Image (cartoon, rainbow, N blue to C red; front, side, top):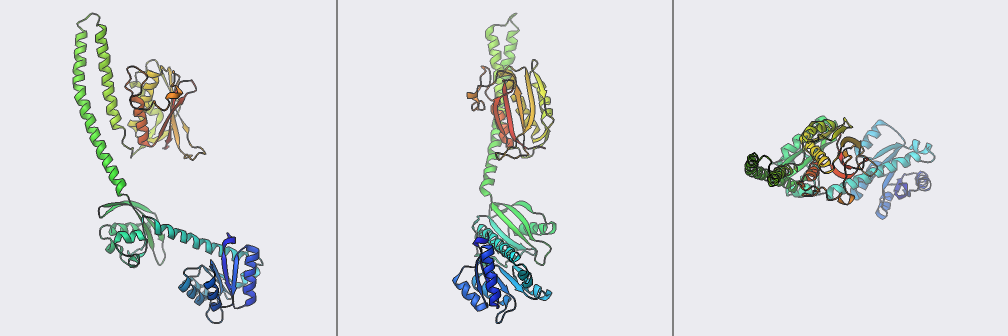
Length: 465
């Protein structure tokens, strides 16, 4: 970093100024300039870009602090390191109050023949200044509202986005009262800011302003100092909020529609099934056509149930709870009609999930293994899904594997499509439901070949409890 630092050394001793500048250039690779007084230093600054000034405190004419005031009046916040031969508390206090970036005794510089300590201080001051400038550039150009506010609500600084939101120019916001500038939401912003100054912990919350929705982050900046301030970052999330609300409304309408359709179809289907059963009792041996009718009724019943399930499983899981994968598998297994198949649970791991929907996912994978794969054994287990490819190393995954006939590799991408089925009486919704439940949790589900040459479904991206 030293190679791209331009430093100006100012000292009324020409020998000291030239020697210091030369050492910083030769031993530390800095582009160095030197001057013997404040006026000469201002001339250098007029002709060259300087990243840091190292100045003696006691000089004829303007002293070091007066030079700093001159520099900042004409050239802005150039990092300034003050050198002094007398390390008194009075001088140190005056230097700090004036706003110098660092303060160092001349004797410490001279005793360090390589000037390493001074070089380190220069690098640190310049690095902080450049970081601050990058931050200011980011704040000035972000569409988010960013402001720094004192404990009493006085606005210390505000970015252009906040000025636009207030409908005033940026300079007029400095020193203004937050609650007066934003009567609708200023009080909630200030209350949150005062709370974070009390606790030292950041807060997030939502608010509304002029019909717009904002996601707010409030963090403490200066705590337990003479000037307690907090920073507010408010992001306009109106479009996202409206999309979420519209999606919720659509899902509610879909759920009502699915329930209505299910009810309207189930009634006539139940009557048809009952009459087919009564008709079958009229025969000692029911005719083949009647059995085909009953099979069709059963398939329609499963189809209605699957459509209703598919309509209800897509909502995002907002409140997952700690759920044991093995317990969920064992709870749902008795309802899968798997008399000739064994379940082997190889995990006691807990994950964060919607318990009911996890059971629905597992039951559909179990039915797939038994109905379509003719499996004798179904295994359920977990493994760590983190790796060096950018995945979360703490993430878990669980699997359902069987020893059945498996799934052809060329069908791996299509098995989750709605309506896809290899069985004549299948509804084609089972694996689509699995996919939808996984998506609702933020998981990824993939199919492959098990160690027993059957099918294996891996569900990754799972949060451990």
